[in-house]
Image (cartoon, rainbow, N blue to C red):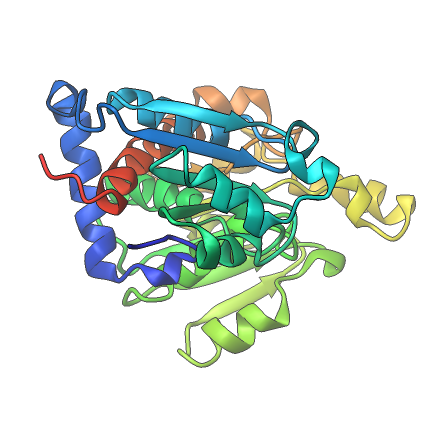
Length: 305
């Protein structure tokens, strides 16, 4: 039995196979519409989510399966004090596969050790978000054609952004990738990402507080939210917040084939007027997420078409 807790648990070859499967689903959806008939996905979401939870549900329904679950911790027996282990052991009696989101880092790993069915980490605290990374990788592959020789800018909350941490880890395995890390000092990339991923593999990266200087050289710009509550004082937030708002005016210096990405939800870090720019790919990411989750469910359930 296989789980997906960390994107690094998938080899580059397995990611390629998932991308190929997702692209086949895109081209031939009817071929897969009963692939998981009589299979049940349980969505155990201990913190709020819109896109990820509904994406998993849409993925399972698209494969002809069914979905059970809850959307907040207060709706589950953990509100009565039940342990994660007991919850997943119980749900394993009802479902064939579980997608789990939890505010505590490592909770899906604990669940995977106790569950009797495959566990998919749908986000654990500020740690990992592997299925968002799969959506990101499919988007990059379809927009840029390859993962190699790309200059990737990560902008916003790089300290708590689990999507950023997972994507850096995944992209670090491809030749010629470089990173520009753009954030306020309070939200810089964690040292463990530098020390465990970037520095040991000698991956070129820069750190900057401003976007405008690096934007012209980027192939991919990955925006994230800069949240008011992450700052130590209001003055710093007010001083820096506009620095990380992407506008059509700022994009005038960017490459014509720049790929603009965002894991969503956005607040104001990308102006709505950017949505009509052909370089905006963040809503494509949403749709790609559904297809990659469909491919992942098929892999973990060992369903062959």
